[in-house]
Length: 286
Image 1 (spheres, rainbow, N blue to C red):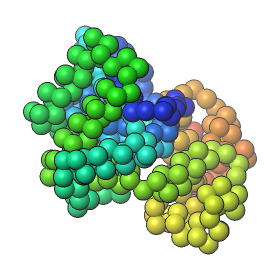
Image 2: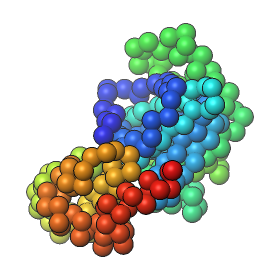
Image 3: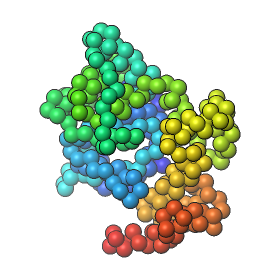
Image 4: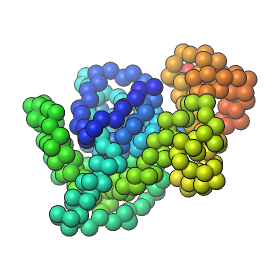
């Protein structure tokens, strides 16, 4: 699993990939706003996938994501990504509110972004100009290790996104303002694949067991144990179609050390055994 680890400031990065390397599991420790310069990105939710085309801006929340980046024919997949944490977005929003009287209201809601940690939206002309300029700055190494320059560009990006009434990224960004919730979610995501009890997880979050379960269900829409099982099975399903690892290896990697129990849970969730699921998807690809 690829990991994007936290740094001390908003970080602006350009990624270029010349080949298609299949579905990848990526763990984000910070929030990300990206823009696809060339190619197509697919974000997977079980057997469904969300297409993020060239010229689209997207948001990925903290946690695990299943992604496939596909280059254009004869070209590379290219994207620019801004990484940030909750403290940084709070500082930026405070600055925009106090100094520029930006009306910051978390009132956007639609089926495309409600309750999701992966959101995309077609970039409008002003946003395309912004990212093309950032691309040039990166080529000229304007940012370097300059935290001030990066923060200025991050502030400009947030301003542009919040100024667009219909933009689905608006709600995601404003939801990042809750520092206590950000810490809660980070601890939960960091422990999905560890052998930790719900009681221990509640202690790590500095909550009583009752308060932890209540807060967990409010945020993730499921009880803790059930949600963790679903996350582990979703990762197992990805590994079945993207690697040659054995069912036993995948079960262990996803914290199901008992293979028989793993197979039973998988079949209960998806109506098919892991081997049958792998075989079915191999036939589709042929």
